[in-house]
Image (cartoon, rainbow, N blue to C red; front, side):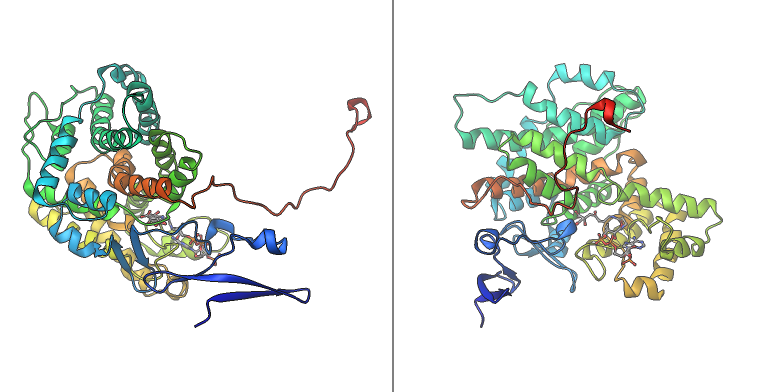
Length: 429
Ligand code: SDX
């Protein structure tokens, strides 16, 4: 089998090594291309460019496969918990019982947020978007939890990882309570990671929150499905910002900002807004399908399409099942689920969506589950961020430990004006 690729130009032949991944994926190693040929490559959106070698997550977009450290996401969603999956992603192996117990205790021990941070939370405008608050406050964590010189780099990283995994969940709940003018609820030692979050969100002095194990399970499944997704936009942002060797809090804050975008993590909120617009339009999905197909209309079906998946997103399948389970358990009928199903059915029969390989992605059904749990719409992407934390952290750690890692600094093809002289202002115009 060929181990090199040949680049022939102007009568010269340049050979470049071929890299073959453990699942048979092939890449041309162009790391010496410019040095040997004077050429660079051009690949808008990096759709054809591998930024790294990674052992963490495998996706096959054509077959709809997703595995974390080799384990299919379907098995993790069925059997694992979010904390256990976070351990798997960050450490590479499932924890034995004692490891899982001490990891859970560690997360609980660090679940409180520095009381002085409350001044910041209290002074954001009440209607500030929670993603803007979260990215600001995660970046502020370095100020409130400065590096301890006596700690080794490994101890410092492990402490930062623990704080992020545990405190981001608490910060999300704090920001929600303050936005409602409600009393902030503290984490409880006896509650699990997901149950603690629900309790911090919904417990009240006048109406104690009753933990429903089915909602806790649904939230674990939700976060497991969001936990990692190889080199998506926000993970690429974490790796790029991290490549400048900035602290992990700042790199994660950059990931949160990238995730906020409606084409990425912000899509889960945009899906619900689209379904509500269809509902307000009498439930007729066809005008929205027509707009999505119209080349001059910027409208896109939110929750549809994916850069990698050219078939049904395996996570969307699981989330769709979760919708039925949770709505049945809570005895809720959500008309938006009916609209979502109608929209999916109409789109998947339409040649435009078939020809463009546009299927429901992770964000299409997640909003229905979050609504059933009681999460407010403007916090949907915050829920995605909490889930994606283990992925961002594991990818950042892998990049920091990569002996071939370099500062991320892409090239460009300049298409601007050639050299010209400065013109004094009185000779312009
Ligand atoms: C996430 O990368 C990840 O892994 C992300 C994620 C993760 O876990 O991290 O999976 C999470 O971000 C899921 C995606 C959520 N975003 C949305 O649901 C927003 C709607 N979807 C799109 O905008 C779009 O599908 C993207 C951004 C997700 C992917 O688009 P690409 O790969 O950049 O492709 P493109 O924008 O170049 O579109 C290719 C064609 C175009 O038509 P043509 O000009 O070629 O005729 O497909 C069309 C697009 O107009 N198209 C859509 C469409 N998505 C693509 N047309 C209508 N509706 C859509 N949703």
